[in-house]
Image (spheres, rainbow, N blue to C red):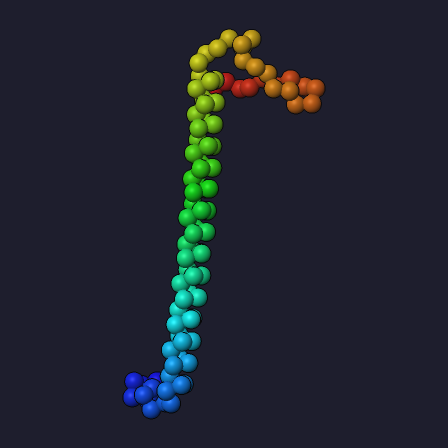
Length: 88
């Protein structure tokens, strides 16, 4: 709709349209901010998960690369079968 056509509308219609556009703009901004917050939270969780995973892997690597005698490496139990961790 051209600008000239807008001014030909009755004032109450123009005000209602302006309010509707303003409300839709606010709703879109709120939805956008919620989506952005969700994305930031998701990225933080993902990065925390990756950091924890990397720390766990590096701790395992440093533990098994120390060359400890096998009798000092703890055995993990799965059911009743003892399993020795593999050395790298």
